[in-house]
Image 1 (tube, rainbow, N blue to C red):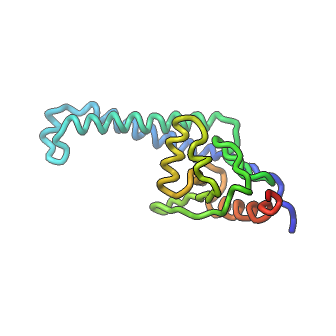
Image 2: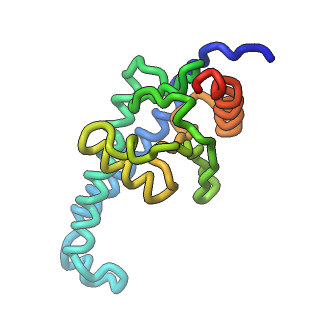
Image 3: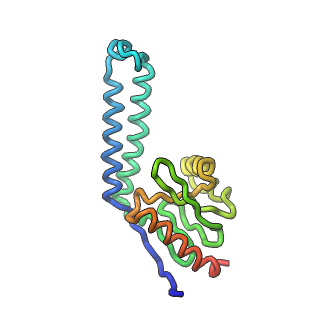
Length: 179
């Protein structure tokens, strides 16, 4: 079997730009909700609470504003999105996950959006890694998909099927080396 060399998967700038533009649209929508007059809101039977509508506007602006900022940071970052090599998976923001700690992979799908779940021998080690915000997201991932690490190809310059095949091939080849 031919040895697989290091594979660097870059972040897709096009996909990130699309996400940033989408985030800006939602920030504008949140701003529009904030600008609605209370009397106008109360006249509409579906949205009769100005507090609810304005609160939704604030939440929308904050959440998608943060998404836009993260997207812009990724656009100007020189870090690769993912690196696969003989040592393991080098995550763009999460450090190295050695092959010896990876038990396998599973696919998690929601509305035709797939993520590659990295099944770990000691998930708690990764749930509690990183800063406070990172740990919150790790816990959320763990509760949702059973692992703190789930790889989506949304922001990567690779298709999901390619990502899945590469991870399995590298894992199979280097698992024995890692033990």
